Image (cartoon, rainbow, N blue to C red):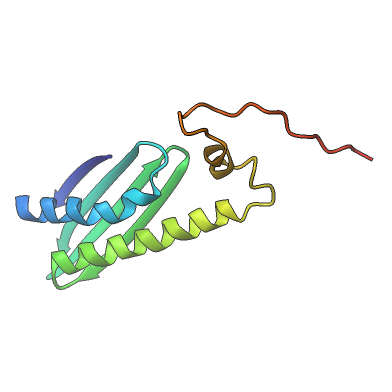
Amino acid sequence: MRVDFTFKHVDTSESLMNYAIERCEKILKFELNPMDIHFIVSMVKHECTVDVHVEEGRRKFKASATCDDFYRAVEMVTNKLVRQMSKDKRRLRAHKNPERSHYGQIARLTPTLESDFTTRPLRKAG
């Protein structure tokens, strides 16, 4: 997991960065590929805004929150990301053919992390 921060119209805050990284631990359970997380922290007219862009392989997620407090905005953004990622995970698990999905491939891994290359029967056209 790689985390980047951009501060616009706000001084950098080491404690806010540590808090955001700590809250990102909630979304690590959805990580299948290396994940890039980019936080954009800004202040406009006394409103704290936090935008987050997450890229994980081909999957991309985006969330933003506006609040009076940066810490509360970070909490709201991570909750939004957890909802988006869990919905995506449910969608992948309830796929039409789960054996061919990414989660089905992970389920076929043996305990020694070697792939099981047994042949699956093909459907006959007709």
